[in-house]
Image (tube, rainbow, N blue to C red):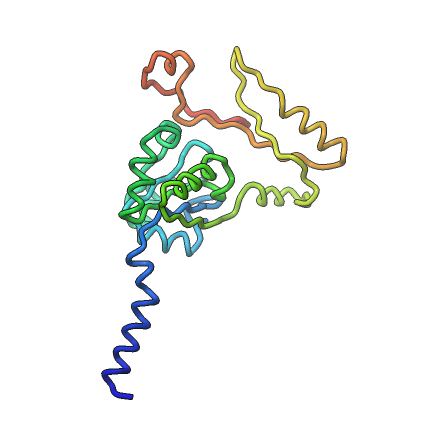
Length: 217
């Protein structure tokens, strides 16, 4: 085999190995884990380093410790905060999903990607719009609860407990806790957080005034 033929074969093999990462643009949905900025997986970090934009979803959960500045230092690029208004509005389709057809974009979430229905919806919207999307998993509270010493397969229905208001006091979580207890199962209760939220009055009046962050304990 000639040297020229050998070089051509090597070049062809090299191109077929790396061309998908160079040409195929996509949206990466990346789980960050539970503790701090260092919990990201190697695959997640490598994917972020290929992205032109990096978003951090900041309203369904927050890291136990670690600031956005530390994430930016680790990633080597700016991290854009994606609050509730951004994620649930039209901006996410225009600035994230559609742009992922032309450039790699990372959408980072605390815990695992599928820990909130918001992120499942984002995945489905990408599929509907023909945008390539890749999910990179990480640790979730659904498995992290094992730190209590309780066996995971002895947990029943998971419930969410939200902040009450004067007009809204949902109690559906109680029935599920009761059902779990009746059959001898534990209950994982996900408690509410309020990050960059508007009061009912400001929301109705269209005023961009936000309440201080609150965390149920």
